[in-house]
Length: 214
Image (cartoon, rainbow, N blue to C red; front, side, top):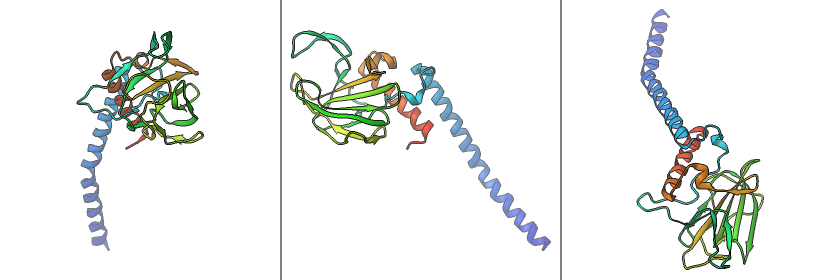
């Protein structure tokens, strides 16, 4: 009996020792990931905003070898069709026809409609009590009002519906705070389309890490 206990103890110690390097390695990896999150958070200057509340994950797949093309930024401009100065309440991003458009944040779909002389096929997602996003000029819509979507879910497809100008398809994207459109580039601290795309993907990395999304 004593020999059996000694043998079992030896096996148990050997097993624990064999797992020790794995546990240490996992601890180191988690520490490195946490440090990465801290660095990105500081770079984005979002510590006071609350990472989980920001619905600015990628809404299109970005090819890093090509430019993220914003054809029109947020701000007052001469409307290309109406020829009057109006506030352009979002950003226009060049997309291919039927290119998948993804939810930039998790939330509930509160509007799906078609407006011939406005946003065409458009969607609004409410992410929390403060933020919502709008996606316009879609060729087709994949979801319906009341649906709950996770960021990265395909909600529609790039198009040219509604009041648009030119031959290129584009996505009109709005970030709204308390139902008022704000400048998404300025909000995330970006000056160019590529910088905006880069920071969106950094936010996605943080959210994936914090919430265990693969």
